[in-house]
Length: 299
Image 1: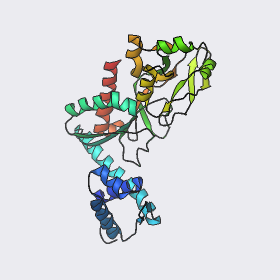
Image 2: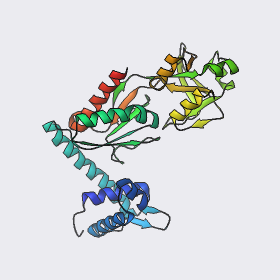
Image 3: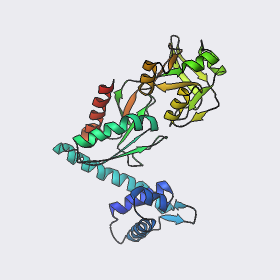
Image 4: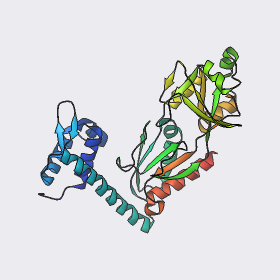
């Protein structure tokens, strides 16, 4: 090895490895592809290794690149943890804080909460990414995933932020035209607005009723991976929707939507998912505590 590698260059390398593209990596960090290429060349020179296979269409890791990628992930994670622990000792939340959330929850609830958080803790450099997939927190350098749903992996740490459940709903005009289903099985005769969000099974609704858990397979002419689009379709009378109460409570209260099969619900609490203990990171701890406070105010 000629020189010790730069931590910044390692971050750029991991981003290129995740994106499979110099251009995409450059767009994410707000620099030029030439800058990214220069940093990768510097890292390869420092390590005296070829890390990437480059073609006109794609970028892939070499065998050495795979090993360096695993090593770099661990190193950067440990460096981040060191900084967090130092901040925790002094009680000063500061520095970069990367958060991911799903489109509906992220845009309507998490984003305004983080705007308030930034005012309270100006030392934080907050970045919110909206993702419709599950994120590997450690591999992608994410501090917190604010998510809906109670299927949480045992390999992460999760703190509940708010109770929530999903219900079935439709507009009155749709029900007058197509009838109100009297059982879950009758949903098969209706247009159902199916949402593909993250790890949720597509077209399968798992609900709990008086007899316990039940599952129904639903179909419809419209489907999307965005909950807000599905909500608008529902308000336009295009079918029956399964949606979180935090998203449609005002529509139900105003009579724009009607609760269908109200004996059934789907538990879908809101969680803060992270990899480090809250006591080890001042910035993560204050963020989780603040989000819990914010959601309590909304309930």
